[in-house]
Length: 195
Image 1 (cartoon, rainbow, N blue to C red):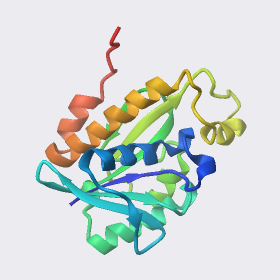
Image 2: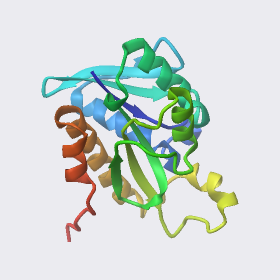
Image 3: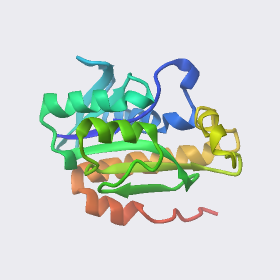
Image 4: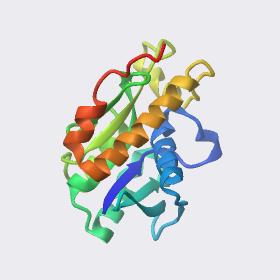
């Protein structure tokens, strides 16, 4: 069973924020495969279903972003998930708004959620799908970055974000069914304009 883990913060005050893109992507996957999230045995919400005969688990840690790895480790140990079948979905302020990028591993890129997952799994060799949030609204001063990632998208940004979420959820399902290499080849390109 492949697991798709969306990173974010629980609570209505964080809903729709840039940092909660991971939650939004797994919510969309859940709707696509017709499952609903329920409380798990730990501090997380969980959903399980299938797509094209492939079993898929969805996870939303409720430990807040900086401790996301606790829930990921719990699921990884509880279900014996190989690291290459554990896809982490998160925002990325180093990618332009609207871009998604799949990678088989790597560092945390300054993302506290990824840092926590790497720390708890004692490995950075797990696939991740990063969704770009860099925009003209992003502060030049890194000290202001926390407030930026916790802020909501602007109405002007939202159509781009919704299309990115659609592509990210499709990429996650391709990963689940056809593997990382196929998903990377299809989705690690600049989206073409529909105009």
